[in-house]
Length: 312
Image (cartoon, rainbow, N blue to C red; front, side, top):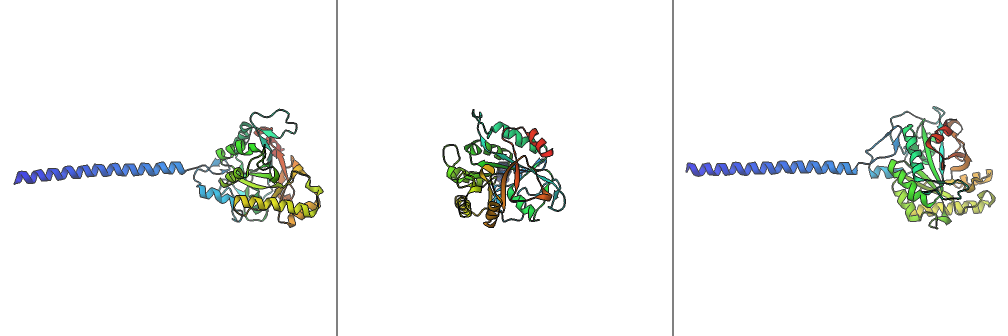
């Protein structure tokens, strides 16, 4: 009897030991899976001053598309920010047009950059501690809702060239920095320009804003008030239809031509941010006019040259 009881006891000990070992392996497996998922879902967000925050989720990134929120697109950063009346700071805006590798021959207007050069531009600015902001941020700043860091920079691209999607977009995703692309409605989806679905794809990342450059690529300083407002509203409405939500009314003049009347009429129509083509102008916060924003050409220059243009 004692032998039988002893055998049962030994079997029970063996079974309990096996169960304990199995439970230990199960716990280790679950912990590893959770850590793996955390690593996979971790992603780099908008550059924040001289660091990159790696803990912003997809949902939080897409909040950049919501211009109604009274918060900056760049979130909390580890450098001081200043409201519009607290300190006079520079507000540079870069302009790019087309991207192609290698650059095409006969680029007489010097519109083309390459993915490598654009990557160098962005990386240089990040290393110099610049925070990338949006034009929506500028509006909130002007309204006194948010502060901006002293080293801020805005990227814009005109026309909606195909390379903005095939080359520049890859750099924006790599560094998680935002940009605004001004499109010409009648060029969307034609030979050298990205499609509406590609515009939607870029927008849905939360990194690319899509705004109006015009219904046509014409000199809008020479059209009637009716045509001006109808064309810009038509394209803005088309953008909202494609993106599936309301966006702020922001525009840039094709060919850089505007008049006092065109500025006034579009502002009355709700386009409170109007980007001009004043090459080389670095905007200043103490004279910040959202209907008269100048830009620095960056297509064919180095990051160092961009810094020199800002600091001169």
